[in-house]
Length: 350
Image (cartoon, helix red, strand yellow):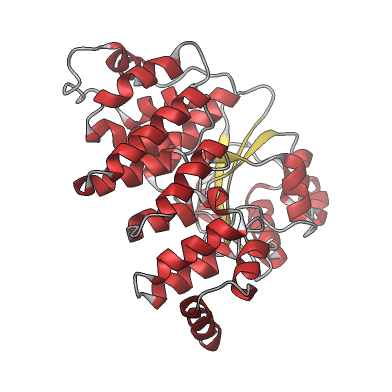
């Protein structure tokens, strides 16, 4: 055990990864699948920063790590609890490290025995995200490590290039879609998708939008999606399509064109609960000013569902970007009597 003795002094995940001589990348996989800068995560681990994008009171993190001699990454999918201020629960993180060290010592990429596998698999902080998230994560890791996409990439690219038979989508795989979208800034990919967008059947549009929510892309594609979203709002029967298209804009929801269409949406008399939930869970950056968020809260109240209002409000205040804005809204002199009453009820139940 002498070779693992120094490992017992390891205080953070960042330290553990560096000491194991691993190369690594971090991704947030809670709300969207996005890169998590190492410097930012180190500050989160030291409780110098709240976790930037909490999901249901947890930090959901993917860690891909590998040795220089092998580019085949190992993957940890972690769900670590946060406290009420969004800071990492140090005890949970330390417990996770202790389990890893007990199973592997400092050699994280060793071949594991059955006993080690059992120790690792009983780790209470590991979780399995939804399949569409795993597909996007897998695609992003391959792009970052400059690896080839899956075998499903070419058939999807071919499908988008085929301008005749859009109904012939059965050979399209979700992994091919996420591989393509993760490379949206490469070659002519953005143009291919732009041209195909008006023709895609729902069976293809839905996974395309799920993949797009994790990427930032060219303004021309943002505008095309914004226009498709506006058109879908004029057809009430296509509510689910509107929700999908709004999702596709998630990683670009701070963009002025997206913020503008969200303002237009919130100025309409009625907004479906599906769209409101999508806004808070994925497109929160579009709500990041007091006026817009106030409109948003007023729409939520129109659904006469205090449980929905309560869960969304509590979720939004956990996001560091949104917390001061949400608190300013509830203290505002311009809030409606309905909002004042809902806030009163919310705090009387906490």
